[in-house]
Amino acid sequence: MTAATTPADAGKPRILYLSRGDVASVGGDRSDLYVDALNDGLVQHAAGKTVQPLKPYLRVNGKEGHIADRIIAMPAHVGEPGMSGLKWIGSKHDNPSRVGLERASAVIVLNDPATNYPVAILEGSLISASRTAAVTVLGARHLARKDFTDVALIGCGVIGTAQITALLQQFGHIATVHLYDARRAAADALAARITAEYPQVTVTVADSAEDAVRAGDVVVPCTVTDKPYIEAGWLKRGAFLSNVSIMDVHKDVFLAADKVVVDDWEQSNREKKIINQLVLEGKFSREALHAELGEILGGTRPGRETDDELIVLNPMGMAVEDIACAAEVYRRALDQGVGTWLDLY
Image 1 (cartoon, rainbow, N blue to C red):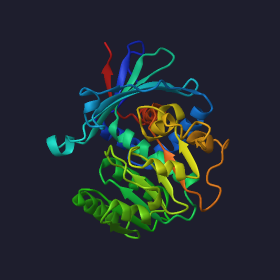
Image 2 (tube, helix red, strand yellow):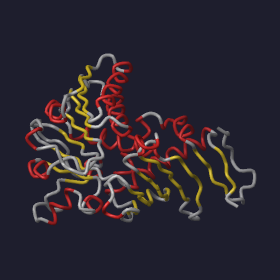
Image 3 (cartoon, one colour):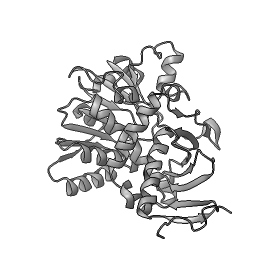
Image 4 (cartoon, one colour):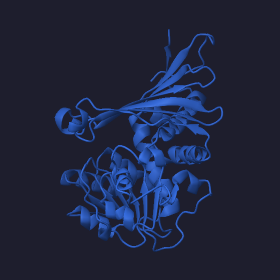
């Protein structure tokens, strides 16, 4: 890692490169940075202070390929004057087994809105996983029961690990974590890690997704499935479901929920995801939606109002979230002299 300093020639465009290690070193390895940055970013989004085009999907194999095999371009502008940027995130579902790499990889480019020149390039997979977990944390603050004790996590890979880590960091009252993964070894490994870091928490590895879900006050599916499997009847009254991987729940879950919340309606109602399917079938609509999460964070819509409400958060994942978090990482890197300067030309 090369220490970042202010470029000697202020008139010469330069880009600050931040590796994953650089991101981690300025607080990007903890959930606090992302929770705070996202709370602000989502409130600004709800207030109309962001610009976010619909994200295009690049699928080399077209619709015949696996649902997780794609590259997504995610542009956004956040704040006044704020920061503009793009996350370019690729995913191949079989990367871990086929080539020994993480399923997803990403870079984030930040641009100064005063000139539209690029000012930073960041390794984006740590930011992407962590901001996804922070959305669940913010959801749990406002949409889960205040006294929740049991968390069910389905899928124990990189995203699932980030989710449970952030929840344990932010909620000291979690008593039991119920894990399930189709690969038992992945669940066992995560169970061992949680036990080592949080000895006060009881960790169980369930024999089925159903067993884990039925036990959860907070339920977080993090898989690469393209076939729904979670049924409404599996969920406790009063449960909060953060539907991170989008395709895990059957349609009846949305129809049975007392409140459905999304991060962004337009992003959620597309690409034949479950909400989009329900809209096309005439069974759901913008009017049936309770709120966007930023509206709840900003206080213009209520969160949980009774203990027995079944609440579903459907976070599609937004570029606003990535750029808000990356901008905070960039600001900290400048303040702390972290990163490597690259000449633009």
